[in-house]
Length: 383
Image 1 (cartoon, rainbow, N blue to C red):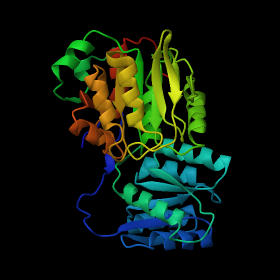
Image 2 (cartoon, one colour; image 1 turned 135 degrees about the vertical axis):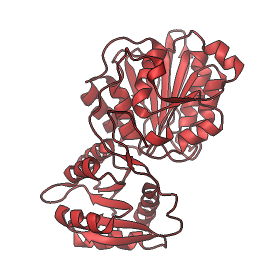
Image 3 (spheres, rainbow, N blue to C red; image 1 turned 90 degrees about the vertical axis):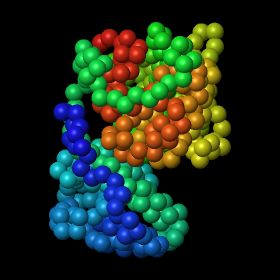
Image 4 (cartoon, helix red, strand yellow; image 1 turned 30 degrees about the vertical axis):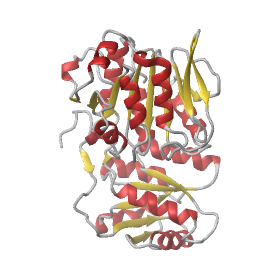
């Protein structure tokens, strides 16, 4: 499938013909005990086979070439070339679904976020116990099964789309829009941007934000991520992009240039006031199966900003965000979805499209330009 010229093609697409055959995994970890534990956890239920156990990068390379697995589980910390360095090589030379196995430390969290930004599908924390049927085993199997269905692209440095490039040059898929939405959205630049993402979203958000100038209207984001990760993710984005990026706090005014990310254990909402928009943090009760929930964020933006907002739904599993984006569209907001061919998991954007919530779908590397056009933003994208 053809991609934009500065991107590599999808090289490890989901395999709809795999049918009922087991997911084949190669386990890479320098600890013999951990390799055996991961193998036992993977094979505790039918449907997954650990076809190779590698103690170092050299062994892993040989096994990947010989066995062509569906998924690789990769330890972050290994002697010689560590897991992050090996992941970078995999994503450059032989992109395939990778699930990182990380320790319960601050350094492990930072390494996990770095891996997700490089293109790892997901991260699992190393177990505190040794029961393959316990929480670690269940989580690992779920994420490996999901990873086997993911689309993984080669990650190469990409240039931000030129602000001068015309709209006609952007490959899009447009969808019919209700007449009221056309009338209310016409000619009004959004003063608030809302983005939702899940699996694959850490890398997608990093790429999207890198294509925007710093002085955009305020941006609010819900990314499915555990508590403890979101603040560090925001910090990494701030360091990398130079934007005002932070984990959202309750009652904070949303100023131009601010990017706020929902905490991993609280719903993020937006409320309107006499002096503009402000954040509001809700409770931890799951909505649409998640906390934080994209539906909660988008629904609040529909109420607070109406036609003065734009919404973007990115890669992710499930349906969270579809109903909320539909509410935004009904309120007159401009609503974008990430294209199937550029998603790691085309679940949330598909659900939003099927619900009639999306005006147009775009490849990920074209979404920043469309947002710049909608808000009339000038200036350079982030370096």
